[in-house]
Image 1 (cartoon, rainbow, N blue to C red):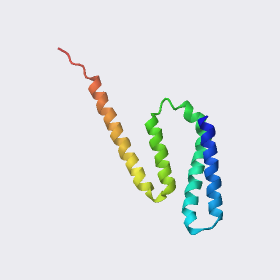
Image 2: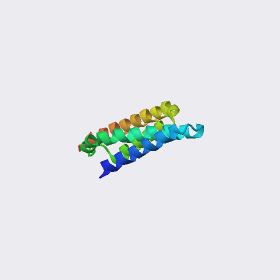
Image 3: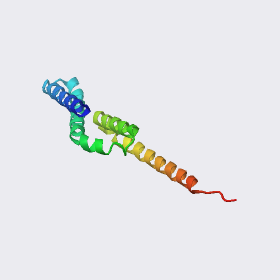
Image 4: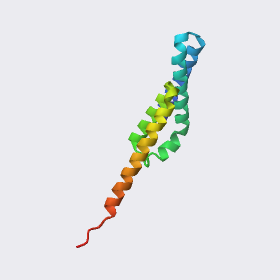
Amino acid sequence: MYRASIGIIGLVFLLIGTSMYMSASKEALFYAGTLIRIGTMMIVTWLAYPQLEKHGSKIPTVLIGIGILILIVLATRPSLGRIVIGIVIISLAVSFLMKLMSGKNRNRVRRR
């Protein structure tokens, strides 16, 4: 069900973006490019959906949502790529450090 709707929405975005691009209006070029990028991303997600579903139990839902949001931001504003990559690296480092610190506390056993 979800796979079909992702594919249909992606195809609709591609068609609308292509038709807006063909209209050759200066204002429509930004929106056309954005729709084409997001449509392409959704079609790729549609193609990879069985693998995403297979590994979905290992990846938290929040992380998938953040990943999709980052891809949409990069599709609309590619110039923000460096900032987004920096934020992702910092958040992964903080997450790794928190996991590392919580693991040390669990391994300590108090002996009397």
